[in-house]
Image 1 (cartoon, rainbow, N blue to C red):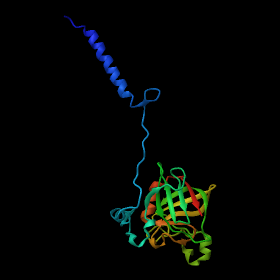
Image 2 (cartoon, rainbow, N blue to C red):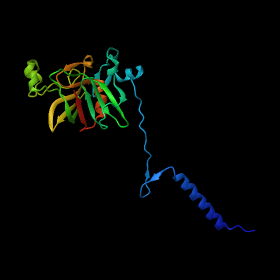
Image 3 (tube, one colour):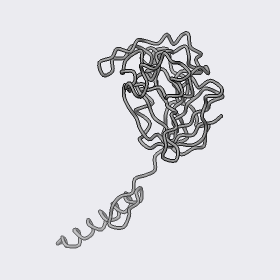
Image 4 (cartoon, rainbow, N blue to C red):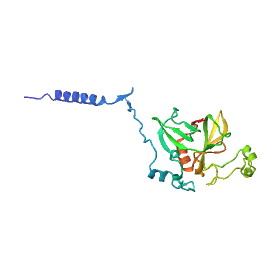
Length: 234
């Protein structure tokens, strides 16, 4: 008896085609044969940090030649620790939201979460609210108090705009990072910035700006894109 090898080969190719078709049922393709990736669910841990995480988050940091001291986080209300939460804002991912009454700042993430930071906010009468854009970002900025502040506190004259401001450093009120808020193309003089005074977190003490611990503002700076939308609630 002879074997028709051509038939056997055709049968093998047919079986291979069926097998390939079965496997292809697990994927989809766009015109041109390019595979379409399956949508993925973004899963991030939600909740307060552990003790070990806190020691790292708020430990000493060397940054651009400056040694930022550790924060005694045990003396801060735990609600103001940096932590990921379910997004309460309803804003688009990438938006920064400052909840002034609650003393929280959120960076909205994809997937329904947000990174939350505790902040200190401006004293009543100096606070700003509304929508704006983070138009400028700077590491270890110079502090240039506006002329109105210098007029109220003449001892700040040596740091005035005309005199070039205060050099960067651990004692600089803007800390390790500053993000500058503009509205309708104009500087609001409102900043998100670091600060060495961790005791002010959760309180209303600054002249109109939102302050974070230096360790937190470094983390914030890396998460917030240039031209990000910012919303400040009152």
